[in-house]
Length: 221
Length: 221
Image (cartoon, rainbow over all chains, first blue to last red):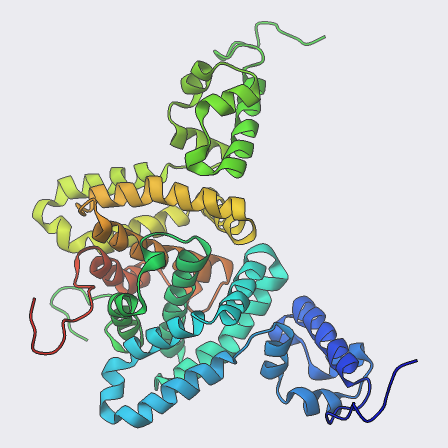
């Protein structure tokens, strides 16, 4: 009984949107049950009853599929490497000393977009309430955000670099939680400019500053 | 059929523990439905079918009743004013420049106690999942933690003082979430000493440092 006349023809075959939905539903389930790292395109395709090549064709990478399944409007790694990479190219040598401020502003402007904020808070909520959500968010943050932050900030790909990136993540998550979930005032109604001034230097220290315990008095390393 | 022989007699009347339980159950419900500020001792007593004076007798203040109902092992305001107040008395003029480090260490040592950590994470979870939990945690944080932090750190009781205290709260909540809920590595296995060195200066800046946006170039205020 479906009409299939010439008014169709937006380049999608009949049934394509149903297939996409089936893939996204299978992805949400797999990511939930197996975590971000454990879920495979092959397994998701199998659950959705389609060929893995079709999943690759529709969504490209696993991160992109995750973002679509979780209704993220932007890829965190693209936001970080895209916006910060462009600023790095524009500012040259000035970029390094200003990365904390630039990162803080980028993050706040992303959260100003209601859909992005909603998706971010959804991930936080799922991590706060289920062990599956924890595994999923931890692996996603580590595989995409920490990795791209390490790259764009020029951090060493070692334990110290990852420690610096996770310190940044702790302030990012806490700011999102205090400002958007708890609505703590006056933090919640502070302007982007205020918060960049207050929190930018924190990010800068975590990324490039001295964060190690002091050597015992009189001993320099 | 209950035995009421001489083996009893720990100073509690028969039925006291049942009354306490009824009060705590009524308190959890009232705090959940009305928030921390909206819940009254009178209302909780009424729900539990007891006299308000008995609630005061058992629990003293509303904060103490809240802590008992939420199974907090310490009162956050007592932790802050007690531990930090003692350090202030001990260190004198040295206390001010070290408050960030002392606050960070105090918080991490409290979280080392499993029961305290569990209660803290329970509050975070309830805020992440229900609007009632949000209101309860926001008002509790504001009425007790922000207030006692403002006092012990000698912050002005104005918008700037509260802004500084809520910036601290954002890093505290984020550290707890990243370290204990998400388990982000290597943050999660960092030592207390490492974290005091990394995060202490953040707390110090939020409490006592320069956090305002710069004046336009060439104009000093």
